[in-house]
Length: 146
Image (cartoon, rainbow, N blue to C red):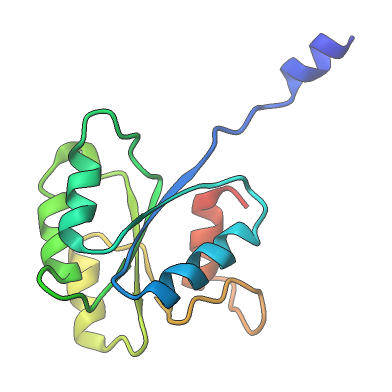
């Protein structure tokens, strides 16, 4: 009977998130918020767009389900990073959420054209306080399996 019950329960594959941000405090806050969801997420960190590209293109690296990407980083910004990864067919299914203190309308339009799933305000807060049904927070949680 126990075997049958185990077969009926669908094992959810472990989800993974790649945080790309150059600010250590913002990285720690994002990790803490993700860990608070209690999903057993695999969380990797890249401190630049270049490092993120290297992590994604390593053949032994499992691709993340979601990328949390800071908009403003030195050297390679979010939009250059997005243009590069969206040129790889194997990266098209990765959900990308931009993180910024003050996203403007122009950034939102550019992001939409590059297939961004949503925008999250920094510092990241994944609580449900004051959240509308169609918010980026809810989309992210759904993409993570909440």
